[in-house]
Image (cartoon, rainbow, N blue to C red; front, side, top):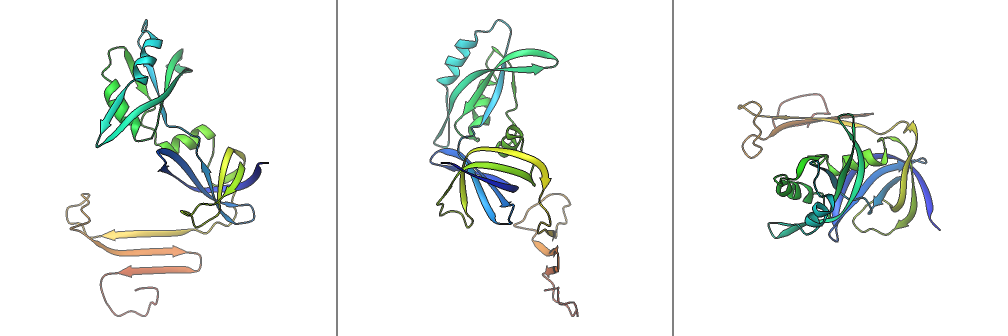
Length: 228
C-alpha cells in the first residue's frame, strides 16, 4: 500500500539515469526532516503546430522515425499525441511531441524546424525542471503531498521517496527556514566579460542567522574575527 508524505519543496534538479530523466525534488517535511522526492514518470515534450491542410497522421508517422545523432548520442521521439491548445485566441489541434531526454528536445527541433508543413514549434525552450513545476502546479516552499514509497538510494544523503503522484496541497509555506546568503567578488578589468581562469575570485561573504563570514585573498590586520 502506498504511503503519503507532506513536505515543502526547497530545490529541484534532474538526473539522467538508465537513459531516462528523473526529477529530484528536495524539501523538508512538516516535522522538519529532510527528504528527496523522486519522480521518474515525467517526460520532456514540446508542441508542433502544422500548417492548414497538412496531413497530421503523416507528420506523426514521419517524426516517430526521426533519428538525430550528435557526439555518439541518438535523439529520438518517444511518442506523439494530439492536444487542444489556444493560440492567439484561436482553438487549435496541435501535436504534442515527447522526447526521451531533455537534451533531445533542441536536437529534434533543430531538424524539424525546416520541414515545410510546420507552421511553428512551441514551448521547446522551457527548462525541464521549470516545465515540471508548471505542469504539476507546484510552487516552491508551499505545502505539497506525494504518494509512493521510501526507497534506498546510495546517491543521496537524505531519505529518498519515489512518488507515484504529487500535487500541491495549499499555499501554506515553510516557517523559519534556514537561509544563508552569499556574495562573490571577482577581479575583472574587462568589465562584464567573465574568464575565471584569468580573473579569480578575490572575496566571498556569507551571512545567516547567528553567522557571518568573509573569506578574502589579501592579508591585513583586523580585529574582526569573521574575516579570514
